[in-house]
Image 1 (cartoon, rainbow, N blue to C red):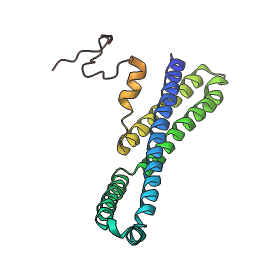
Image 2: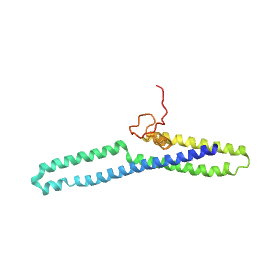
Image 3: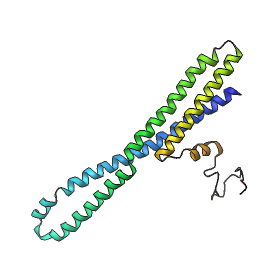
Image 4: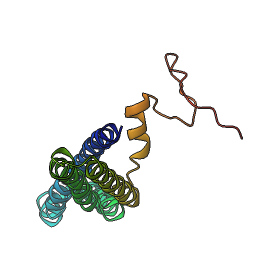
Length: 184
């Protein structure tokens, strides 16, 4: 029974690490694209003076083009400043690494405190300590992820129940009716 609890939490830690790593990749990818666009558009905007001198008959068109270009640059810079894609990606990577580290630490500790413990009471105590470690780490990671803006609760629940939204209505006709109904 205790071993099943440890194994379940190990599986959850691995699933959470995967979820966080995917979210980190997404944020880092967006940050990279925003950076590339800012650099490219900024370099193009820097040619405004040369453009106006080379194409004197198109000054009005150049004014409109470069004004719109400035707006796009400002929007991209504002989105990056508001959503901090790169910083979020870095923090999510650290949380995913923390999950994986906890999996390894739990495995190593299990062998030392549970697997080779001669006394059955020592095994139970060691197993309980591991469960406490896993629960503490899962709670800590979930809270930090939520503070960053990534809600892993529903994704983890979906892995175990197969239901995308356990509290709402699933619009798909093939949805399983395994949800618990809560009284209002």
